[in-house]
Length: 335
Image (cartoon, rainbow, N blue to C red; front, side):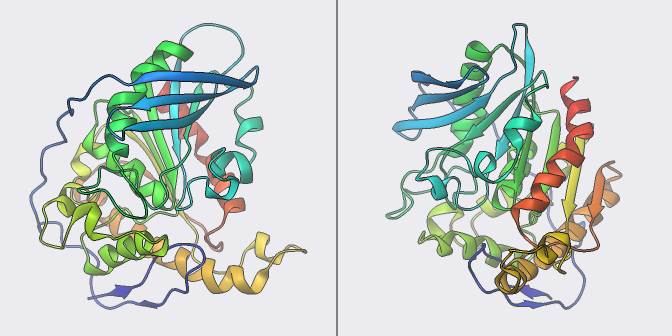
């Protein structure tokens, strides 16, 4: 047995490790999620921020509200693939949900400026895991992000921004789990996956505790998401159990180990708090990544796993990882 409390930046984390990580024969793999039927989403408005960056406001029937998605789109015409890039636990709260944390804390805009690919950045979804919740939450509201991202949004992106139907999905921390679930539940929709510093496992009780801790950290009730432990939704949203759906996909998974790295050593940083919080979080992500790799090894599914010899749970490392993972994503997208 192992125990880890793995929540989100801003929460003290404890970590105790005991015993084996994963038994491959624990549970059968459920079938991928069937497409949900819902009224068609529609564009409320599109605001051009720059010639190659737009804010798209989408009427989502699933969530009964307007959702903002920012899109980085290349100059010039022609069809191109799309990369859906998911956020961490705050999901844009730092900017009062005016933009993704990716555009606030990394150079993602500059990096993709010369690449013929749409980058789709949902704004919002704090502590939602980008999944469909069982129930509305008094604090976090109605969360039907899987329906929005997998069913409602892609036709709009393809129609408005020349999408050619080829997609990949990537995410950081909470968004890494969200991306992996979207991929395993909708393998027809995505050709590539990149997950940075995530826990792609709900097999162990400790991993489920980490999910609950992340939701509770932002004031949500975890029971409103996938219910109690015996609810089959936990298995249905477990990338480790459902990894067979990744066969034939391009996959990049990375994690640090929680030890101080170059960004902690740089002048001007808050070294103490970064190590105290980001270190244990990244150590927990490292453990989960090993569990996930064991599962893919058992299934003989090829993937790129990168274990850094330092690094905490923080944005400078994720900026680096996006760049490092780009060759894998580029191959999946065919650009």
